[in-house]
Length: 218
Image 1 (cartoon, rainbow, N blue to C red):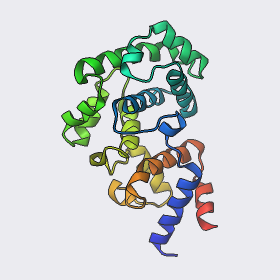
Image 2 (image 1 turned 45 degrees about the vertical axis):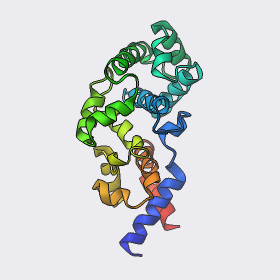
Image 3 (image 1 turned 60 degrees about the vertical axis):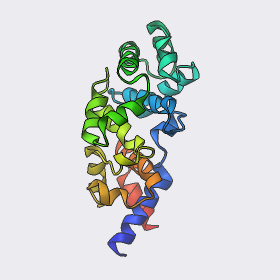
């Protein structure tokens, strides 16, 4: 089996078994529009804490179900309301700090970008490093959360693609896949780049490298 064929079989196994993006898991239909982009930032912020991805997705679904789907809606909520929603939806360990930081985040988003992350995108001028820096300027958004956002937003912001952070490149290396963003992302259709990144993260979280290798051989 050629290396190219091996790569494509590995990628197919990744997408088939682990290719649900974290936005999809959270109930977000990602588009280049203010509300879903904000919702992606919320799941990225929640996942960036030292908590399980499934708990972060559950917490995000809870916030969306409670109607906190836009910066305006979240800004209109109280800290106690946000704590209650997060606590009831699997995010109990960091509910109080997350509720506080989300309140600060929406204040910044409104003040600096009129509540629209597309303005942040424009301000970064297709410079991914600058985009990453601006994301980390939000309350509670560190390097991990910024990378989560960028991994998934590359599906709608084409100038971010190809994006693969250090963690996804490390997992790719374990599977003997390309470890530079361009060759790695070129193994899939552009629309599937976020799915590939999510799959690599899920494989790492669940320690499923051997299962992916086995599936690729079948």
